[in-house]
Amino acid sequence: MREPPRDLETIERWLQAVITEPAGIVAGLASEEAQRNIDVSAEQIEKIVTRSNTLTATQRLAIYGHAYFARNVCAPSFRFCYTRSMRSFSISLLLNI
Image 1 (cartoon, one colour):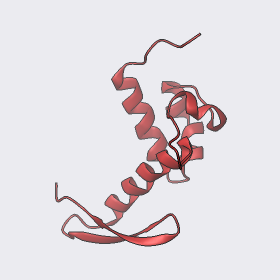
Image 2: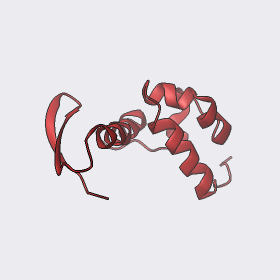
Image 3: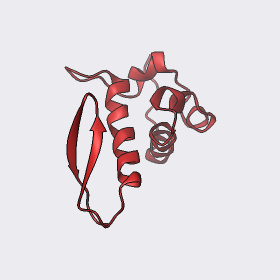
Image 4: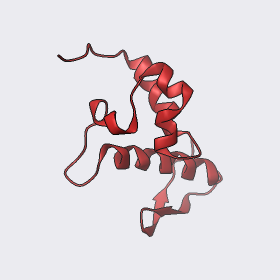
């Protein structure tokens, strides 16, 4: 039986708790804040986030987590910032917001 759809505010709070955890996505999933919003473990994550053809749900969330921290580490005045991504270095274009 499928679960009823979750409201957007709950999903946003859950996603924020998961991707902003400094210890990583798995720790973010287990955090009190994430569990309060959507009670799901790392093993059950695909109930919430789908996998792609090449990435698991956890890897997909990790991309957002890495981007969150890269944006906060880089000074907003810089247009380009070097970030370590997966196994290589890439240049990320940051918007000056």
